[in-house]
Figure 1: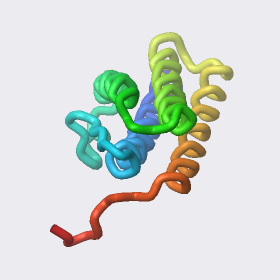
Figure 2 (figure 1 turned 30 degrees about the vertical axis):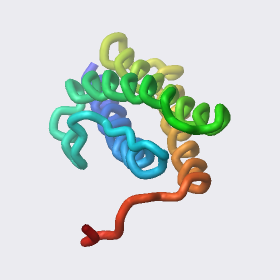
Figure 3 (figure 1 turned 180 degrees about the vertical axis):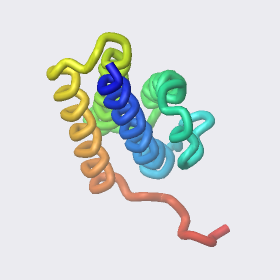
Length: 137
């Protein structure tokens, strides 16, 4: 059981780390910036279990805001699929915490994290970053 708990915490921490990249994409690669409420770099690392639950709500909210973005359907789908993949990974990670680390849960979370990272690369190559340079006002 300790192994299941450790795996849960490992995946929760990794998902929250990937969320930092998602937050960057939503803020700096969309025509209208979408923020993850309460997000600060590194803020989720202290208590990954409770923070994962909070992050799920924030990502779901971002999905709803995404519908208002002035994007083509194809581009909106890229962002939405990235968020859905992250949410699926978070929900399956929750399943690991509640029901144990079956091989399909572990493999699914690994695959979903890889999928999200692929979308991040695709989006970064498709949409220019509008983040101001360090030190700019």
